[in-house]
Length: 367
Image (cartoon, rainbow, N blue to C red; front, side, top):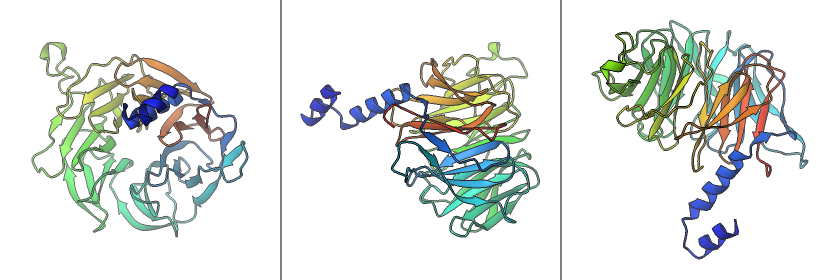
């Protein structure tokens, strides 16, 4: 530590190197935090969580009971032991009728958030009034939606539903303005690139992952191929497939250079997002029995970066570029369905799909 500080003071080292080293050390020392708890609100399993990017203070959670909860993650008690309180709950007549599958804060402030549900709707909420400012209705269950974290020239929400067509909804006009066609089964996950605002990745139950430039009208840019075009390794059924099963998880690295996918073939793959090449990193068996979207996450600001993946009742932590299993974060009583990384505190939060009475967060020794 003193060596890092001395080199930084003398101008001999990159100022960010100390931050990356400390962030990495904290991730490697993550353990279940005995002093921090989360208030129990949901009456059933929790399907999705999101921590706001503007302040890093508020967490959204969406449950199988159709309820949405906003938590304050800050410690206002001044005590070492504290509970993250629910500051607002959406559970009145405006709530979703069925399971909430995705929740997301508006990327630039906490005045608005978006939720989607198996009640075939996506709702844009005013955080102040907790009433829907806009409601989009679809023909089938909504599995996933996503707003671009960097977009300045568009305000599109990508939506994956039971229909194979990806819907693009415009926040400004309140209408569905475009449809992307290329999948043959329900679209389980959608994700905008954090590097290029017009690049979108979509994953489907047809075993395929498509990468799109939404400005083009002639189809996807490319389809990910687990065999990198080597026909001798691919059966006739596996040509241009990312997995040998349903693809239910997508996550870009923070720099947008790589894309991670998970499938029900119990595999996780790392792809070059520029050309769709499978990097062939071997993560081993990554248990995945979910028939819906699997929410996993990648660390930010570490060297190397880490991947946090729900795995049964635990969260598996892998080194991104080597595939090495670093540790297993244990503490849940039932299957974990979603997890999120908090870059400011170098901590991770995960929530269970089946047991609402146990909600955990991990932290390093200093947090």
